Image (cartoon, rainbow, N blue to C red; front, top):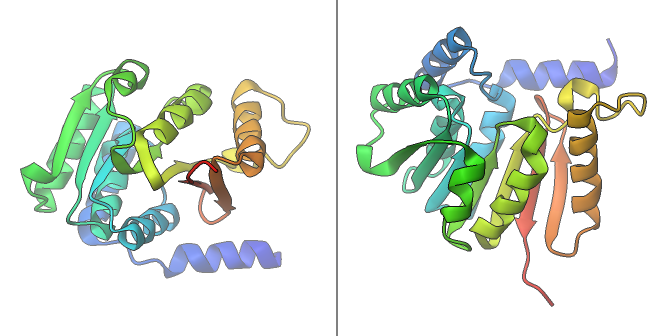
Length: 211
């Protein structure tokens, strides 16, 4: 086992996932909702806590897993969750109820993100998590950067596409989109960008003030 593999395994096995999130994960997997890993979930919880987030958006519910991690970090925040799968939203609602998240702390919107996001107020959110429709990831990140305030964060899990992004031979549309997203945000003066390799990978973008 390589050093990188050993580190990844240690990180993966050292994270203790709260029982409410573990139950939501099991249900999400049954539904085929592909929730974020505990490694990524713990990172987004820390970022939500560090920013003192009050208003958050997630694009793709993961049947409640990512939202529970975000609210674990920022229990004072209100989370808006967008998904075009009513079954996934219903599972998220149940997961939040099971975790005793007050109904006032979450609102659920059924619909295509491409239709919903343009109607949301710009510079009004602290965190936007993009975890849906990977073929549209660049469009969703652009919306996310419009929605967050200066100093707000856009988070993109699965950004390494299972190792395909690092392989120059891989040139399918989704891999190319994620690769371009990473490269372009590293060079953009509008954001501070970094990528974590823990779990399935997490791109972190902080919106900065224009000079």
